Length: 360
Image 1 (cartoon, rainbow, N blue to C red):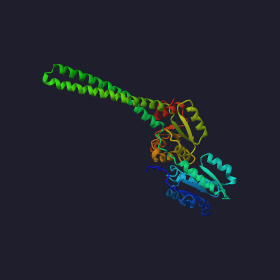
Image 2: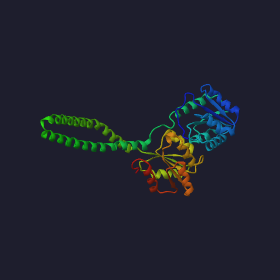
Image 3: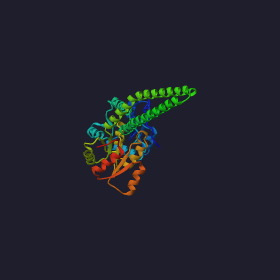
Image 4: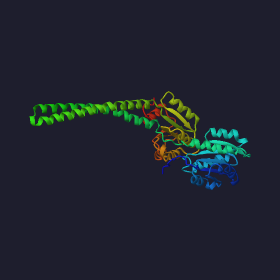
């Protein structure tokens, strides 16, 4: 079943996950004044069911420590088939001693935002403001933008009409000329009884010729627009998202693609990949299988279940070349497969096959 990503509702759902009901209610109080749909989840065995039933736009992590918040996110992504692909923002509540660490975790994409909340809650409005910021950023999650790949394909198709129409126009002009000549000859040789009819037929042919010329003039600017669109599409840089937690591999990919027409963006986890795609739709995904949060094959399966993202080609990248791995990758929805370490020529050959135009 594919997920249909709809715009945010007027009353967005907010889920507060905590390890005690008292902490959950403490975080819920300042939010219920501004947001109506606030639910809490405090039982570990119900965590996935609570999340899927709520379908939160904002997830507030009100745990006793940062380790428990991380553990909750890790279990949720592994156990839920929709959490990873469902656009939502995770805000973690922390204490003063955790500020540096939680900042680094947000920077690394483990959480989306943090609020200094414990043990004093006198800055509770800051939590409501963080929710407002999250709602604003999520209002354009998973946009329906076509991306360079589809735009270039449409532009090439439109531009291809120009020579076809030009050839049709030439053939039509030849047929009109031949018909006009035939009608003229028939008019000259016909008897008086039929000459008037051939003369009227000749006038009709002349009118048809004039209409064709008018159409050609009207099509001129449209065909020029198609040529311009084609040229612009060829100048667009397709975007490739590399999902790999190995910084060395990311560096190598950047080095391989230096000087090409490809723009590379990177994500280190499946969660980061979906957050990145929510902001900017890539034209192709290079997906490592061994990711720290969710297996790359599972990330691919979930990506293929999200309607606006399902047609993005995914190339699986792994150090394992066993047939079972290849077949499982293809069943997950991958379009192709690469085994590490690979050469630059191999990478560029794969990109040429799935990206618009010449990538080099």
